[in-house]
Image 1 (cartoon, rainbow, N blue to C red):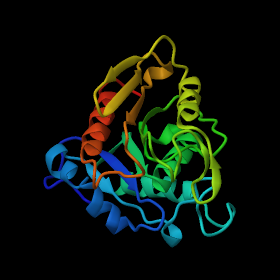
Image 2: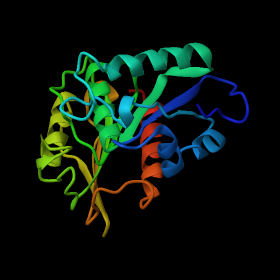
Image 3: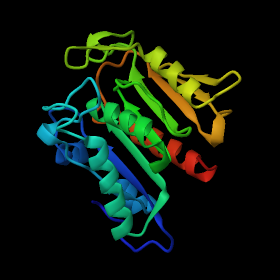
Image 4: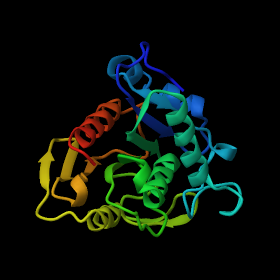
Length: 239
Protein backbone atom coordinates (compact mmCIF):
# COMPACT_ATOMS: atom_id res chain seq x y z
CA UNK A 1 0.00 0.00 0.00
CA UNK A 2 1.23 3.48 -0.89
CA UNK A 3 -0.02 6.11 1.54
CA UNK A 4 -0.33 9.88 1.14
CA UNK A 5 2.76 11.61 2.57
CA UNK A 6 0.63 13.46 5.14
CA UNK A 7 -2.39 12.19 7.05
CA UNK A 8 -5.49 13.36 5.20
CA UNK A 9 -7.82 15.71 7.09
CA UNK A 10 -10.80 13.71 5.87
CA UNK A 11 -11.08 10.11 4.65
CA UNK A 12 -9.18 9.73 1.38
CA UNK A 13 -9.96 7.83 -1.82
CA UNK A 14 -8.52 4.39 -2.51
CA UNK A 15 -7.34 3.07 -5.88
CA UNK A 16 -6.82 -0.69 -6.26
CA UNK A 17 -4.90 -1.46 -9.42
CA UNK A 18 -4.65 -5.06 -10.64
CA UNK A 19 -1.67 -6.31 -12.64
CA UNK A 20 -2.04 -8.17 -15.92
CA UNK A 21 -1.49 -11.89 -16.42
CA UNK A 22 2.13 -13.02 -15.93
CA UNK A 23 2.90 -9.70 -14.20
CA UNK A 24 3.42 -9.04 -10.51
CA UNK A 25 2.02 -6.33 -8.29
CA UNK A 26 5.49 -4.75 -8.09
CA UNK A 27 5.72 -4.62 -11.88
CA UNK A 28 2.29 -2.99 -12.11
CA UNK A 29 3.41 -0.36 -9.63
CA UNK A 30 6.51 0.44 -11.69
CA UNK A 31 4.72 0.44 -15.05
CA UNK A 32 1.69 2.53 -14.14
CA UNK A 33 3.24 5.36 -12.17
CA UNK A 34 0.10 5.50 -10.06
CA UNK A 35 2.13 6.19 -6.91
CA UNK A 36 2.19 9.85 -7.91
CA UNK A 37 -1.50 10.04 -6.97
CA UNK A 38 -0.62 9.44 -3.33
CA UNK A 39 1.59 12.52 -3.23
CA UNK A 40 -0.34 14.80 -5.58
CA UNK A 41 -3.93 13.82 -4.86
CA UNK A 42 -3.81 12.43 -1.34
CA UNK A 43 -5.03 8.99 -2.39
CA UNK A 44 -4.17 5.55 -1.08
CA UNK A 45 -2.89 3.23 -3.82
CA UNK A 46 -2.92 -0.56 -3.44
CA UNK A 47 -1.49 -3.18 -5.81
CA UNK A 48 -2.95 -6.61 -4.92
CA UNK A 49 -1.11 -9.73 -6.01
CA UNK A 50 -2.99 -12.49 -7.82
CA UNK A 51 -2.23 -16.18 -7.27
CA UNK A 52 0.20 -17.37 -9.95
CA UNK A 53 0.41 -13.80 -11.29
CA UNK A 54 -3.12 -14.07 -12.71
CA UNK A 55 -6.69 -13.22 -11.75
CA UNK A 56 -9.75 -15.42 -11.98
CA UNK A 57 -11.74 -13.08 -14.20
CA UNK A 58 -14.23 -15.71 -15.34
CA UNK A 59 -13.22 -17.55 -18.50
CA UNK A 60 -9.64 -16.34 -17.93
CA UNK A 61 -7.02 -16.71 -16.29
CA UNK A 62 -6.66 -18.26 -12.83
CA UNK A 63 -4.35 -21.25 -12.42
CA UNK A 64 -7.12 -23.20 -10.66
CA UNK A 65 -10.88 -23.62 -10.83
CA UNK A 66 -13.42 -20.99 -9.84
CA UNK A 67 -14.09 -22.79 -6.56
CA UNK A 68 -10.43 -22.89 -5.65
CA UNK A 69 -9.52 -19.28 -6.49
CA UNK A 70 -12.09 -16.73 -5.34
CA UNK A 71 -10.42 -13.46 -6.24
CA UNK A 72 -13.69 -11.57 -5.78
CA UNK A 73 -13.79 -12.58 -2.12
CA UNK A 74 -10.08 -11.79 -1.76
CA UNK A 75 -10.47 -8.27 -3.13
CA UNK A 76 -13.60 -7.62 -1.08
CA UNK A 77 -11.79 -8.70 2.10
CA UNK A 78 -8.83 -6.50 1.13
CA UNK A 79 -11.07 -3.47 0.79
CA UNK A 80 -12.55 -4.22 4.23
CA UNK A 81 -9.09 -4.48 5.75
CA UNK A 82 -7.82 -1.26 4.19
CA UNK A 83 -10.92 0.74 5.12
CA UNK A 84 -10.78 -0.57 8.70
CA UNK A 85 -7.05 0.10 9.03
CA UNK A 86 -6.51 3.40 7.23
CA UNK A 87 -8.32 6.71 6.86
CA UNK A 88 -10.10 5.68 3.64
CA UNK A 89 -13.51 6.78 2.41
CA UNK A 90 -15.45 3.58 1.58
CA UNK A 91 -17.62 5.51 -0.87
CA UNK A 92 -14.57 6.54 -2.94
CA UNK A 93 -13.01 3.23 -3.93
CA UNK A 94 -11.90 2.61 -7.52
CA UNK A 95 -10.83 -0.77 -8.85
CA UNK A 96 -8.97 -0.92 -12.12
CA UNK A 97 -6.48 -2.99 -14.01
CA UNK A 98 -4.71 -3.73 -17.26
CA UNK A 99 -5.51 -6.71 -19.48
CA UNK A 100 -6.37 -9.65 -17.16
CA UNK A 101 -6.42 -7.13 -14.31
CA UNK A 102 -9.00 -5.06 -16.16
CA UNK A 103 -11.09 -8.18 -16.70
CA UNK A 104 -10.93 -8.85 -12.96
CA UNK A 105 -11.97 -5.26 -12.23
CA UNK A 106 -15.03 -5.83 -14.43
CA UNK A 107 -15.85 -9.11 -12.68
CA UNK A 108 -15.63 -7.38 -9.29
CA UNK A 109 -17.93 -4.61 -10.52
CA UNK A 110 -20.44 -7.22 -11.68
CA UNK A 111 -20.48 -8.99 -8.31
CA UNK A 112 -19.80 -6.15 -5.84
CA UNK A 113 -21.00 -2.92 -7.41
CA UNK A 114 -21.96 -1.76 -3.93
CA UNK A 115 -18.31 -1.80 -2.79
CA UNK A 116 -16.87 0.56 -5.40
CA UNK A 117 -17.49 3.95 -6.98
CA UNK A 118 -16.01 2.97 -10.34
CA UNK A 119 -14.24 0.26 -12.33
CA UNK A 120 -11.59 0.88 -14.99
CA UNK A 121 -10.66 -1.68 -17.64
CA UNK A 122 -7.62 -1.01 -19.81
CA UNK A 123 -7.23 -3.40 -22.77
CA UNK A 124 -9.25 -6.12 -21.02
CA UNK A 125 -12.78 -7.33 -21.62
CA UNK A 126 -15.89 -8.68 -19.87
CA UNK A 127 -15.76 -12.45 -19.41
CA UNK A 128 -18.64 -13.10 -17.00
CA UNK A 129 -22.42 -12.93 -17.15
CA UNK A 130 -22.83 -9.57 -15.45
CA UNK A 131 -25.64 -8.73 -13.00
CA UNK A 132 -24.50 -5.82 -10.81
CA UNK A 133 -26.58 -5.09 -7.73
CA UNK A 134 -26.72 -1.41 -8.70
CA UNK A 135 -25.42 0.87 -11.46
CA UNK A 136 -21.64 1.30 -11.36
CA UNK A 137 -19.50 3.78 -13.25
CA UNK A 138 -17.07 2.26 -15.75
CA UNK A 139 -14.22 3.51 -17.91
CA UNK A 140 -13.00 1.31 -20.76
CA UNK A 141 -9.82 2.02 -22.75
CA UNK A 142 -9.00 -0.25 -25.68
CA UNK A 143 -6.82 -0.12 -28.77
CA UNK A 144 -8.49 -0.60 -32.13
CA UNK A 145 -5.67 -2.83 -33.41
CA UNK A 146 -5.38 -5.04 -30.33
CA UNK A 147 -5.08 -8.67 -31.45
CA UNK A 148 -4.42 -10.30 -28.05
CA UNK A 149 -7.81 -9.22 -26.75
CA UNK A 150 -9.29 -8.45 -30.17
CA UNK A 151 -11.21 -5.21 -30.52
CA UNK A 152 -13.66 -6.95 -32.86
CA UNK A 153 -13.91 -10.08 -30.73
CA UNK A 154 -12.78 -13.64 -31.35
CA UNK A 155 -10.19 -16.00 -29.99
CA UNK A 156 -7.78 -14.32 -27.62
CA UNK A 157 -7.65 -13.80 -23.86
CA UNK A 158 -5.49 -16.86 -23.28
CA UNK A 159 -7.27 -18.91 -25.95
CA UNK A 160 -10.85 -18.16 -24.96
CA UNK A 161 -13.47 -16.37 -27.04
CA UNK A 162 -13.55 -12.64 -26.35
CA UNK A 163 -16.65 -10.54 -27.00
CA UNK A 164 -16.23 -7.58 -29.31
CA UNK A 165 -15.33 -4.41 -27.43
CA UNK A 166 -18.33 -2.48 -28.87
CA UNK A 167 -20.61 -5.26 -27.56
CA UNK A 168 -19.08 -4.98 -24.08
CA UNK A 169 -19.72 -1.28 -24.14
CA UNK A 170 -23.36 -1.75 -25.13
CA UNK A 171 -23.67 -4.20 -22.23
CA UNK A 172 -22.52 -1.59 -19.72
CA UNK A 173 -24.77 1.05 -21.29
CA UNK A 174 -27.71 -1.30 -20.75
CA UNK A 175 -26.70 -2.41 -17.26
CA UNK A 176 -26.25 1.19 -16.11
CA UNK A 177 -29.53 2.34 -17.61
CA UNK A 178 -27.93 5.01 -19.79
CA UNK A 179 -30.29 6.91 -22.07
CA UNK A 180 -29.99 9.49 -24.78
CA UNK A 181 -27.17 9.97 -27.25
CA UNK A 182 -23.61 9.92 -25.94
CA UNK A 183 -21.19 12.79 -26.05
CA UNK A 184 -18.47 12.00 -28.59
CA UNK A 185 -15.13 13.77 -28.82
CA UNK A 186 -12.61 12.67 -31.43
CA UNK A 187 -8.92 13.47 -31.77
CA UNK A 188 -6.50 11.97 -34.29
CA UNK A 189 -5.52 9.28 -31.76
CA UNK A 190 -8.48 8.91 -29.38
CA UNK A 191 -12.27 8.76 -29.59
CA UNK A 192 -14.18 9.45 -26.37
CA UNK A 193 -17.77 8.22 -26.05
CA UNK A 194 -19.41 9.20 -22.77
CA UNK A 195 -22.84 8.60 -21.27
CA UNK A 196 -23.78 10.84 -18.34
CA UNK A 197 -27.55 10.18 -18.33
CA UNK A 198 -27.37 6.86 -16.52
CA UNK A 199 -29.18 5.45 -13.52
CA UNK A 200 -28.05 6.42 -10.01
CA UNK A 201 -25.62 9.05 -11.33
CA UNK A 202 -23.41 6.40 -12.93
CA UNK A 203 -21.08 7.45 -15.72
CA UNK A 204 -19.97 5.26 -18.61
CA UNK A 205 -17.01 6.34 -20.74
CA UNK A 206 -15.29 4.46 -23.55
CA UNK A 207 -12.00 5.50 -25.09
CA UNK A 208 -10.93 4.03 -28.44
CA UNK A 209 -7.18 4.34 -28.93
CA UNK A 210 -6.80 4.53 -32.70
CA UNK A 211 -4.10 2.21 -34.01
CA UNK A 212 -3.01 1.06 -30.56
CA UNK A 213 -2.40 -2.61 -29.88
CA UNK A 214 -2.29 -4.47 -26.57
CA UNK A 215 -0.29 -1.80 -24.78
CA UNK A 216 -1.01 0.22 -21.67
CA UNK A 217 0.67 2.72 -19.39
CA UNK A 218 4.34 2.23 -20.28
CA UNK A 219 3.67 3.49 -23.80
CA UNK A 220 0.59 5.51 -22.97
CA UNK A 221 1.08 7.66 -19.87
CA UNK A 222 -2.13 9.59 -20.58
CA UNK A 223 -4.05 6.52 -19.37
CA UNK A 224 -3.17 7.53 -15.80
CA UNK A 225 -4.66 10.99 -16.31
CA UNK A 226 -7.77 9.49 -17.91
CA UNK A 227 -8.26 7.14 -14.95
CA UNK A 228 -7.94 9.86 -12.34
CA UNK A 229 -10.03 12.45 -14.20
CA UNK A 230 -12.82 9.91 -14.61
CA UNK A 231 -12.66 8.87 -10.95
CA UNK A 232 -12.87 12.47 -9.77
CA UNK A 233 -15.85 13.17 -12.02
CA UNK A 234 -17.61 10.12 -10.61
CA UNK A 235 -16.94 10.84 -6.94
CA UNK A 236 -17.65 14.56 -7.15
CA UNK A 237 -21.12 13.92 -8.54
CA UNK A 238 -22.03 10.81 -6.57
CA UNK A 239 -22.04 7.31 -7.99
